[in-house]
Image (tube, helix red, strand yellow):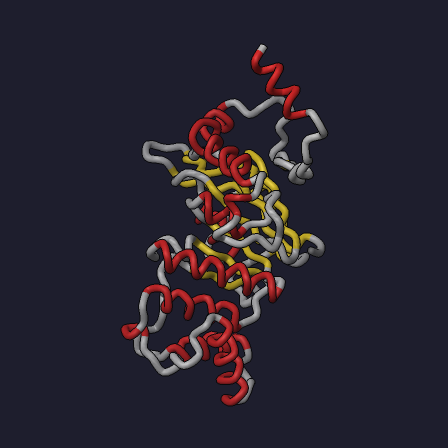
Length: 304
């Protein structure tokens, strides 16, 4: 992975409160995302996860601080950042090809129609929908609609893919399939991803790093957890990894017991400009065969 692509520098979001004053959703958030990283953000509702994503997308502005993407401060929406929402947000009167081509045409305005269609078809094939180009959204399942949304985002070749719980409304089997496809596509393309999720297992499977946010109001980034699982992990087998439960327990313990207390009483030395980077686990121990007579000695010791 390369240098930092996203730099969130001291952003805050405040709203006027009833009766005067302000409500601070989050305060003094600092985060770096390296080029090619897949980052998942976890936190309770109300901590401002979606607001941060909207600021990254240029759909909202921070009350303080700034966001820099690829060396430039963002000032609004741009085609270097593509958003995949919880809902598919497809144009119902356009076909699959029409929806994706519409995005391609916005990116390459002067490209000939044949090139636009070719780019759109390539993106559709990448998400496994080749042969469904002429279907309307009403003819698609929920999973297929979300695949179109992913194809539409990838087709404009963004620097950053912003994903706002894109699989949360799907059934478990479809969700698992799309998670596998999303991870495969992002690893093949080197895509940088910033994703919000409430699903701990989804974050463990997808993310290179997991950002933990405290409760709101006044939320902050508590820590950034490096995923210790191998890069080539498989969804149906990750629970066999010796580091899996240490990681899962750490995330759940934070959400259940530490997310509120951390906000109210951060540990000594905590610096929001440099949230703690947590590394859990390590390589699995080498299997060892017992030495001659070792088993017998253990049995004798156990027998007293």
